[in-house]
Length: 173
Image (cartoon, rainbow, N blue to C red; front, side, top):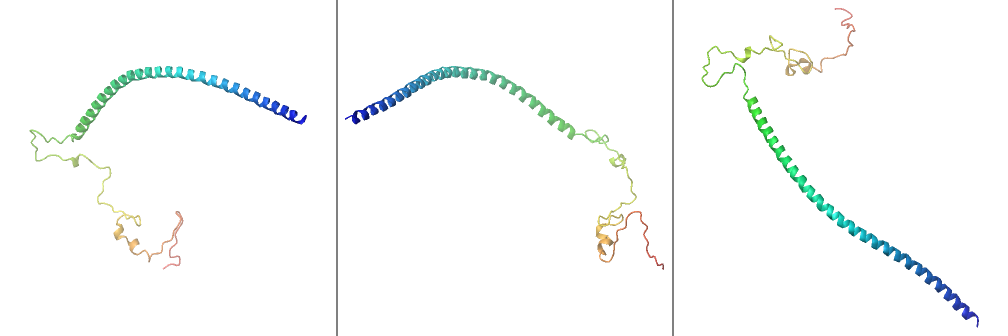
């Protein structure tokens, strides 16, 4: 007889424990719901403030836009003046000529007109042009007539250090 009521008593005590645990969870969840509701109300009020600040920013940005538009117009005008001035400078530089170049309206050239060649002198004067061979490095002939290039197989070249005495034909004639 006593085994059944003991089992039922254990069952009732375990169900009471689960009920108390569930009630604790319900109270925690209710607290979380309240916190979330307050956060939502705060976020709604901050959204209203944010929207109002955004409209203020748009109004301020439009004011700034008008300032920028005026500044852009001023800069475009100065750029146009600069480009016109640059074109004029290019025309002036293109029209430059030598002092003795007097060709133009009402100019009658004489027979003994001086040319530019007599006014410009080179720093080096050559009696005859020197041709340098790029194959052997000597002056007086070109690479097409270089005898080293044509007879390279027949000539034996030996490197001699600078400053050493070269003895050719040591036995004599």
